[in-house]
Length: 315
Image 1 (tube, rainbow, N blue to C red):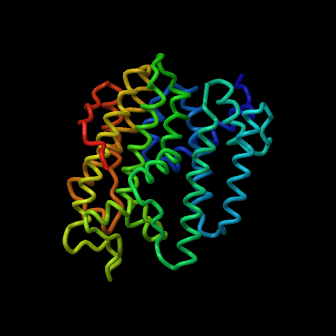
Image 2: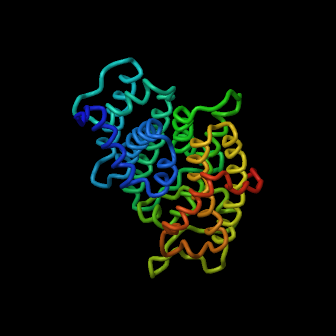
Image 3: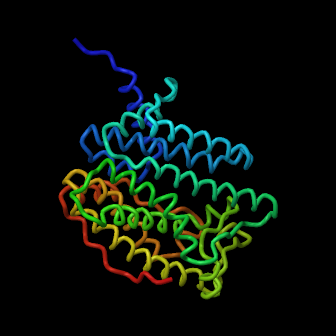
């Protein structure tokens, strides 16, 4: 006799559906995990997606976004305090169960909220001035943001993966998340500009003589190739962050290392493609094909993920 699904089963199923629908890159790694970890990581992803969506909602004011983010922060704090989640919120039901089963650092969600609040402030500034906001003067400034929105996710994942004892495990997870976010930023320069956001450090753009603007065709303008030169420089630096972060892989069990390796491998391949042809990102969003992603995931599962080359870590 088939047992009826419980509320928790349905909550996990809802989170896994969100992951399948929204996590176009991460889902290739998540599906390599055994079912309990897959469900828990899907719950973490679903909540992170909710937080991101609040920041990206162009129909909401800054005050509305900050109120919504505060509500998420309160809900996560309640989980940490042992309170039961709202029975109509499958994502928080699943996160609560996952946090009971695994040592998930719930405080990392608060860091993610901080980063998304920074995005909301950027949007408000852009709306008030009519110009794209570029709040990060230095690479270190941008790295703080990357740590909030992506290093935090790396540490959340580590709580589910588990790792053999190592003093630097959380640091490696953080570095890997930051490497992925640097890739996102380089991939999405045009898209972010369309939303009034420039994440690239202004100090570095000035040093390279590069601008972030659209030409009359709606394509990133780069008449002298200086933006392309900067993108190649930034991609080479990001490779160093991948090299640091991938030191996490040997500390994980086989399925968790395959998951982390697939996620990192997909983004690192994307970074290499961008570095090889920066102008390819000027008019459209670069991505890997489904076959390319599946190939990276298969190599990660068999332990054949290529070692990252060590790149410079200086700004």
